[in-house]
Length: 389
Ligand SMILES: Cc1cc2nc3c(=O)[nH]c(=O)nc-3n(C[C@H](O)[C@H](O)[C@H](O)COP(=O)(O)OP(=O)(O)OC[C@H]3O[C@@H](n4cnc5c(N)ncnc54)[C@H](O)[C@@H]3O)c2cc1C
Image (tube, rainbow, N blue to C red; front, side, top):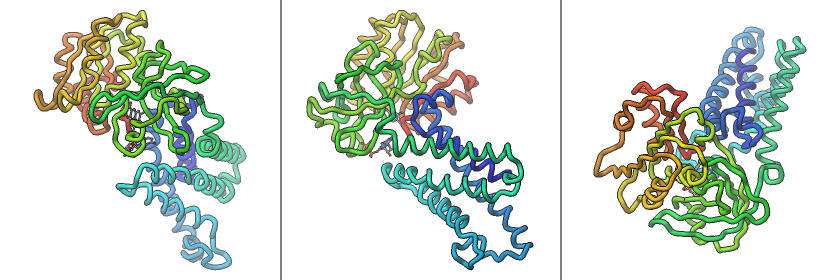
């Protein structure tokens, strides 16, 4: 029974973590962290469900209940059809969710089914668990979890369009920055969004169902909202031809990747790889007006000089910023892969800094491991990996 209670608890937390609610994300330290937590908790919760079934089988079989009645829907008039359907749906869902190569949109729609599955599992645990039935506070707690999980799912999947923090912006300009990168400049249509530098938004175009996340590369002090986008697939490529005046929905801001939350660290080491430079652009632009002197080191890691579309902008901002900024354009083929040891050596003898990392998941994961191995305390490492699946 304990495994089932834990499974329901973790699944409720997973649904809450992915609700994309501004009210809830601070509980997890930001939506980006919430999504990372959900990636770890999800498989654990499913494992606990499987463990629950395995532990449940021997006493049931010992009591003479046929295996078919437990596991096969409609096996006999006594079959536990509802429970078996919930179990197999959950297992089939898990199998599909972990299929490699599943397109992101398919993967996301699959997650939309999690609510009804969770509701089935929750109802089963409340109505069938003898311990839960016998102990009123536990029963109350389980119903509460079911309500929380289903509420979070309903908000995210059914009600998001109407209740989420939504702003309407119109396309002011689409500016090509390099062969595969554009700046999408948006102007508030009615209400202007207030945000912290380094946070991100979801945008939704008219006639399209998907919400795509992008870090904000403008400063909160600017009227226009700028998103710097690397064109990867159909959505980002289509942005390049977004007509001037098109009205887009902007949801947010989200995330905890902002120096504001780490005000006690007066020294910041920032490493942005490729398009992972975007949140740092917003932070640097805010440096023009933020009245907050800090010591900042910034590395912009790129494949080659042509793929460094923001180099000139950063050089200019670094000269004019309030803070003292050391900037280094790191061209990997010329200098090899940047390592945490090299970064730390450049900053020595100071060692009271926080490190902010942003880029593709492989880069960020590798750098996080390296910094930890070099002895940097985990609480001084902040990262964003542009990855939700
Ligand atoms: C917090 C965060 C901040 C980001 N900031 C930026 C940024 O500043 N600039 C930038 O160029 N990119 C950013 N990205 C990545 C950007 O969201 C994806 O590149 C974009 O959504 C790809 O869409 P597509 O259809 O063009 O490409 P596809 O080829 O369909 O997708 C490429 C990959 O992007 C991811 N992806 C696709 N659709 C979505 C979606 N709706 N939601 C989340 N991830 C998706 C998937 O991992 C997928 O494998 C960010 C991602 C996250 C999670």
